[in-house]
Length: 334
Image (cartoon, rainbow, N blue to C red; front, side, top):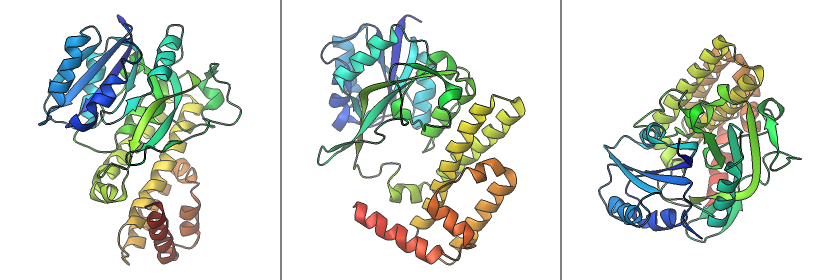
């Protein structure tokens, strides 16, 4: 490893946002300790042309990797293969970083030893520019800059890709992330969990996550369209959890997987509720939940979402009310 940090930019037709993304790594100045890999996933616009300008100006920092289209997971897989950094971070091509906060993160990495480094991040609305912290703090009473044993915090926090900087050596132990598939962020976060022993939380807000774009993966219409992808990722992670049970990994790692998969199961119910009213849906929810309870009882118990618990308690007879409540909640958000 001859770099401190590898940043991978999954890049597919991002010309509209690319300048903001790439320039954020050279403000206020380029950091020689980092490498930025723009992994071009078969773009047909000016994505490569724009990236090459940064390669020409900062050849020791930027690199373009061209590949056939394989989806978000394929760009991360390729980035892990190519990385020369001790640590690894993914920043999507339509997002960016705060230059000052990113600089502080890189300086911290000079002495860091933790497996996971976790920063807070903003949701930034594309139209209004309004910023909002998704999590005010990772958990109540967190001490920023202190290294925790993962066993101390695994039951208190929920980590997302945008927050994470991960030791590259951990990512080289994990299975390949699914390709040609949406919702692989959770594979990227959860596959390393069996190997995580230490984590440090930093106060700086590094990642700027752009929201309000049409077709984003967590947009309800996209979730309906890509329902099969969500199920595919959830099924793979359930199988991975089962494998880790057999491997007898530390209990705190299993608990973290259970809690995270419980959240994913709750989102599966959310997708069911997002579809137009249909009398067949309660049966589908009941079958999904029955399979979860029989195959993964601890994950079934980790579902703590109140609407899901009410649906269960009612034997799914509350589906009409839950569907209506979901519909109005989504309308209010718009």
